[in-house]
Image (tube, rainbow, N blue to C red; front, top):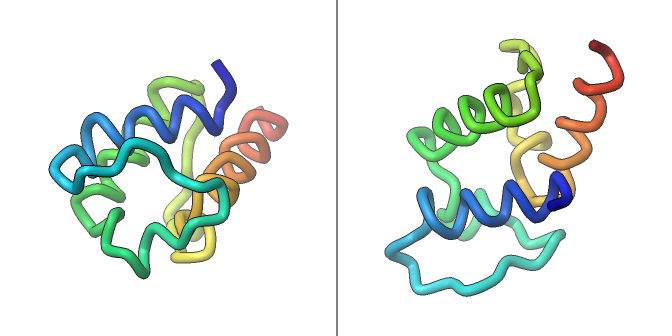
Length: 83
């Protein structure tokens, strides 16, 4: 399963489960739509760090890095290369 697919799966099953979404577009603005809120963001960060064995630094927790599936996947890929 790709990084993007893994993030989409956790978003749909654990964070946006009650929103009735079946899929998310890779560039869909998840913040603007309210799919990712502050609690969801913390869950996402914990999921990414545990699943991909990375550390997301405080300065990387900015809206641009969590706006879409693509931006989150790029953040994970960047962190995996830095390890």
